[in-house]
Image 1 (tube, rainbow, N blue to C red):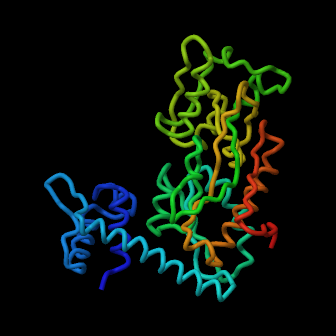
Image 2 (image 1 turned 90 degrees about the vertical axis):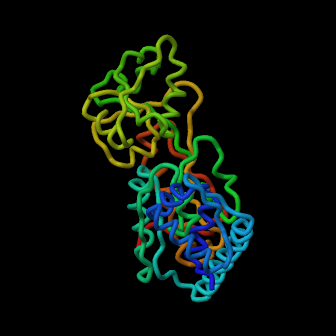
Image 3 (image 1 turned 120 degrees about the vertical axis):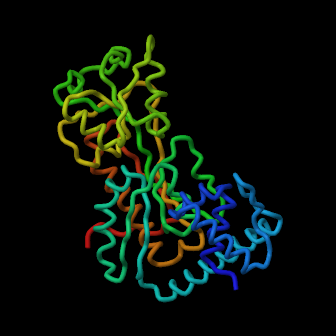
Length: 328
């Protein structure tokens, strides 16, 4: 009998291409992944991996098993969703993973909306950049909140569903005592070349957006000081240490001592999406959480509208179904 958990492991291996990457995605040790795949080979009665001293690759039998496994896992989840939908009442637990800024911003409104469902337990965790979709694919999470600066997330292939939530523009954050804190002062990035800029480390999605912004300032491009986490960057701005370009959603952390200005030129905007497995979206616990995320997106756009220019913009998502009110 083939074990469903081990089928999940080999599907993840097929996506990641290595034992180490599979282990990182699933939160296991490489030796544990290797052992699970070895047990699966015994269960299948066939060699599924072609192993060398430094690498491993799927055999023809391994590829065939992955094709079957993806269908099996999708059918199992669809069956569970169908049975759960018959009950109609959200219950059990729902696991949401989010990049750090979204976790901080969405958690309060999400908790307020879901607390009326007394049989439902929300588990919300932060995930490093780029990990959320993998956690949904592997079954570690039911829903991932992900950011997209380039428009690629909407094309995620089956068995995933993508639900757009927010458009989140890059804004200029300066200390309250900075001259640009006055809204009548024009913002000219060329005049800010010599300011102490701060940003997340190179390679982070928000840093790539900041680099795009600063590439057009003329003369020598400012080289930002690097700090891990947009919340840290915004906190340093509040203390008067420098200035930064940050996504407007970062302001949901409620950091005081910061003034926000619109950046000149064409807006640099990311989209924020909820991603879930297609087989799970009709399960009441997942469906009600997706609707609650839609509510949270509208509340965030309204709450942050006076502070950011341009403002966060909620994206209409008819596929989420009717939104629930946020009280309860």
